[in-house]
Length: 202
Image 1 (cartoon, rainbow, N blue to C red):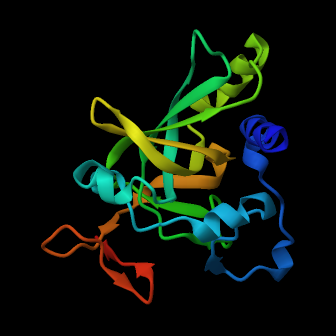
Image 2: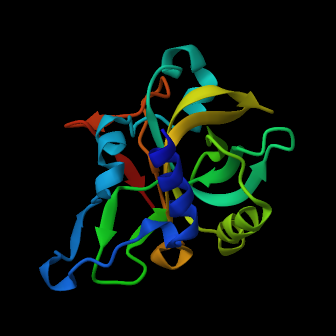
């Protein structure tokens, strides 16, 4: 537990645990490659559940491990229990592709489904100087890959609780030049093809 919590904290401080791959071996475009410590959560998490789904059918999705991607907007430290951290993110659609012919490599959609929160608890209190460093991710508008379970709502904003978060430096993504939304049927259900979320591109 302690090891995992330290890993999460490290991700917030070390440019999102980004690694420099050997570019000569990378294809131009490839599926997202999660880091080793992130792999189990990535493989287990549902990627076809979004904030509006959580809002509309919370009982159905409460026990599902969900992966949401969003831009970090705020980090709060509980005043009474300083080991509890709540991160507010703006959810963005992503096709889970990495474009290694360009910088940035992650091309998010400009579209999304609004805010969500990620809350986790560390086994120790976070010192003030570390809290200040963690807030740098807010100022940079870093990207967060969140893996968690629905634990409630705050002003109708879904709250995911979990132990796995990858933070990616803002220089590695773009959210202004691609415009696509999730493809849904008339019942608001996400349309899948061979297990993959389908998008409508503008």
